[in-house]
Length: 269
Image (cartoon, one colour):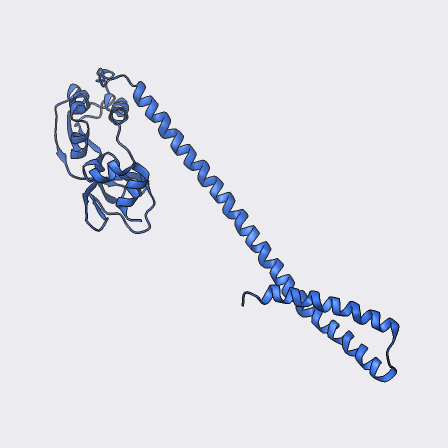
């Protein structure tokens, strides 16, 4: 199906009709070099295709993501434990425009904890380059933090973390639902794998049965023909015989069964 039909089927017509405006709320998540990477939908076309702010290759396996401000806020807050123990002297923040559009009221809350530790500056981007090992990646819908320091000493000072104004009960509910969907998907994949194995076993079993019947029919024809031929030769030389007549009747029944089995094998050809 086309991408537009995909969004319509799984997220509803309202979301599909509002694309690309709703695209930042439901990005596709693709794993690149071990890193889950969001791909923001930025344009919708008349033929049902869409454009993303980053490449997706044919055959990529993707997950459908969704935006939740409370959950997004948890990630940078969790990373502060590392920043506390390093005497950072300056921060540069590079945040995606999608974050600014999706949660404009929480941007200050997201930036404030860094500003409390050290002077902070940065800007909003439409994509960010990230260096991982020996590769450079293009990221969408993320926050990149660069911490600079000229000292290697550690400090014990703890800076109070800024928290979102809303309680995290809603975020916890969303996390629970996300976990439910993820676990259900794993169970579904597990059952699908099991069913495919059973389907393959059944297919092989039926193929083996058909092959067995084919060989059985082929091997049965020769002895049946031999018996009938010898009965006819005996009757031509010695005349009718009551016992041979009974055998001949039974042989005709066997030939009838043979014809049925032969048709069963050959009817599809």
